[in-house]
Amino acid sequence: MAVFLRSAARTPYGAFGGAFRRVAPEQLAAWAIREALGCADMPPGQVDALILGQALRYGRGANPARRAAQAAGLGTTCAAWGVDQGRASGLRALVAGLHAIEAGAHTRLVVAAADSASTVPYLIPAGRWGHRLGQSTAMDPLLLDAPERDAIRQQAMTQRQAELGICYDSLINWATHSREKALSCPALCFPVTIAARKGPTHLESDEILGMAPPSPEPGWPLPPLADAAAALVMSAEGPGIRIAGFREAWADRPTEALLGAVGPLLESAALTPEDLDQVEVDESLLLSPLGLLQALPGLDPRRVNPGGGAFATGQAHSTEGLRLLISLFHGLERTGGRFGLAAMETADGLGLAILLERTPA
Image 1 (cartoon, rainbow, N blue to C red):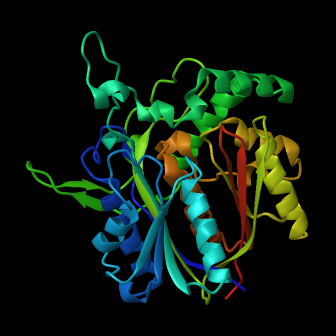
Image 2 (image 1 turned 90 degrees about the horizontal axis):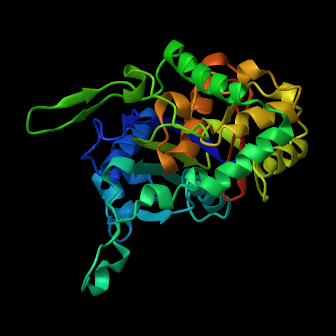
């Protein structure tokens, strides 16, 4: 059964502690859902289900997807549930939607992802049973749920970098060029207005791009944290861009899971790297795009992340996978390309790849 992406929309990326500092992720998701439905010209009442990718759920209560669906106006009869697989939550939600449509469970659904690093509370593990004497420790979930920030994982990435023969300057150059590409391309987000006591704040583009370039953190290069949401409308009927394939892989070493997903996916579709008109690779692990280019020598570097990536706008955790698809969706529409690939890997060894095919009108 063919499954189509009918529309794709995302909020601007808010800087960590910036414009979205007090905006709940469910509200961010509701904004993205309403925008995506409007772009697809689909009334909210026609949506069968919402699948929300969300990893930073601390203190958010039971089933935040249900609240996001109601805030977006999807109605009380719309099914709503969530997926949590770290940074891969957004792409995993899309795969769940793909399987739901292929199985005949739903005909039209919305897949969304939302995370707000700014609203994540600290945790006090020993607080439940009280502190009789002494100091207590507050733990930061932004570090607990970010294995790429763990020193042991960073050491593994440094070792893998040496094995691939990729110098540190190449990593920094890619991160710098990511921002330059984003500044020279049209923004793919829609404007939002945030109500506040001192008056509304309007955010029309990614907040970090309007700031001075962030100073690189010592050690392994990592994108800055951000708050954002994204949504895509999927259906069993067109028009739209067809999901032409999906593959996942697992591996112990960085880049191997990514290649283990991308290679077999292209092979199953009888495609070569030269056939890809645009490729979007998550930059949260900076070895990913550089490792993919090295492994696929026929892949044109100019077609990889042509509008920048996480080092340009920031990293909004669960939203990263859907951001890749949104960039791919609009890129294929704008350039008239046929095949596009979105791929990401996580620091715990998961690789995911999605192939899109745009059929000329």
